[in-house]
Image 1 (cartoon, rainbow, N blue to C red):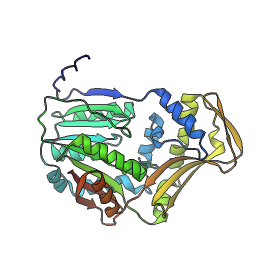
Image 2 (tube, rainbow, N blue to C red):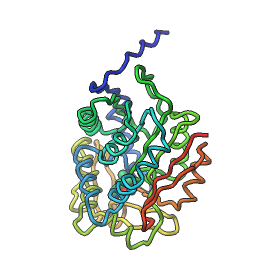
Image 3 (cartoon, helix red, strand yellow):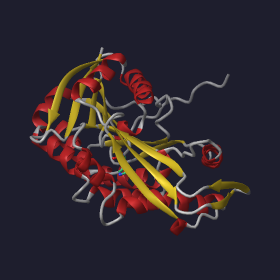
Image 4 (cartoon, protein in one colour):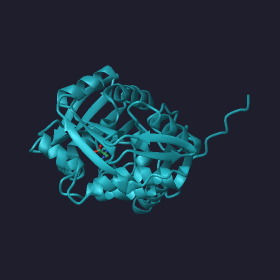
Length: 330
Ligand code: AVI
């Protein structure tokens, strides 16, 4: 066996990147397999090509999409308490690195010296890593381009004294997993931070259906564009011939399952070709593209406990729309 290369010490201001990206074929295989299912479905991680990342940023600015601004306000309003909870000299590992305002608040308050963002979108990851390294001259940044929905062994990093690892998973992205997937993800995070490590995780709370329906089906149609961009991506990258005007965005909150479901609905009966294969749609048939699970505070604490965390803190907003959990790896 070849010996592992000796890890090189990090240098502040010099961003280091590692790529563990799945091959382009995985997108093709997942789309072809998903379109062949009785309930057609495509995993939501494929929303985030360059155009998808831009559209998601536009969603975060919408008045109906309260999640981003509420979480940012919770973070800002409780930052001293959050920094005390995390403690000094923590390595900050962020899952997803799209919207940076929250990260900047945290790095500033924690005076973080080692920041490890993990994201599947290589361009966004590079842009945000370089931007942060420029803003915080003392910061060592190690960007990991990877699909964090799968278990991941992080590279060994040397040269920065660290007392504990802190994982940050904002935006209620955990809601895009089924509860079983969320449990598996939390177990992986538990392993990555090690005993005594901490997790700060933003989770959207259960609430009135009308608020959630509007948040995922906005009147300007930005969320519709975000959803339908998936078909355009398939056309661009996999030689698909979807006519996007013959499909429509559909999103609704299912209170019984406690989750928003997003679908792309075929308006007509039609045939589509992707990567040389034919798929038939009948009018009204859908491709299921996303779930966004909502949790009560106690439901999510229960999930955290099952993954090996001890739930210690919860910060929320006055209207109880959203919350950030602080958990310690037991
Ligand atoms: C990234 N994720 C947490 C968003 C959500 O709210 O589930 C994705 C999204 N889908 C539609 N709007 C936003």
